[in-house]
Length: 273
Image (cartoon, rainbow, N blue to C red):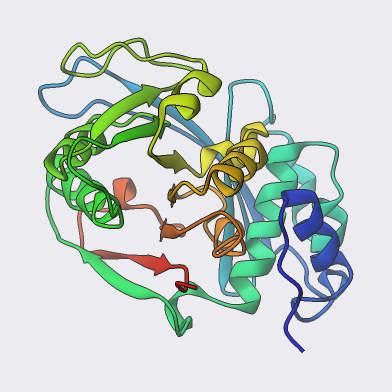
């Protein structure tokens, strides 16, 4: 019997702990844990992106969650290997919980073999070429009228451009940026852009900072399209297809920015009712 549809991250966590999605997470252990910090500045940009990730490997899956500076210490990884996933899904730290949940869901249903996933191959190339291909794949999930206002929660400049190419008007929101590459003001007030939006594009990083459920609930109530692009929690976001998430670009680890060779991301669309 398939699990009932979760409508929030805590509901999903409890369903996983109860064994509703497959084997009990008590039976699955973390083989390796690592903490990753990197910076990126694309050619022609004045913006340096700074990201930190916690990665947990269990079997053939990597669970990932980004976090803000200081939220997770590199020392965490020294003792995380060998823990069972149920322990880490109950952890006090939200990024740890999301990474563990992502590892579990990615292991019991890998993206690479999901029947409803469309595989998109990002080409071999420069960081700029691969970023443009990735963000065009995300924007291609938007189904909007010309002039539609699109709340972009988590700003990457190629995605701003890709939304414009789709005919949308981006409403950028980010905790760490003040302007886009073209001088558009970036607000840190998510409520403001959600109130104006005809559609929403949100980063999976919202899973790690606790704002995902608010976005999900708003889009359900207002019947807005919600496209999620996720390196963080790509399998977690997938669990909400049809429960607020209308489309997903899932990019499990290893992420596109860590390779110059062709890699895959997986696009999903919720079934229309």
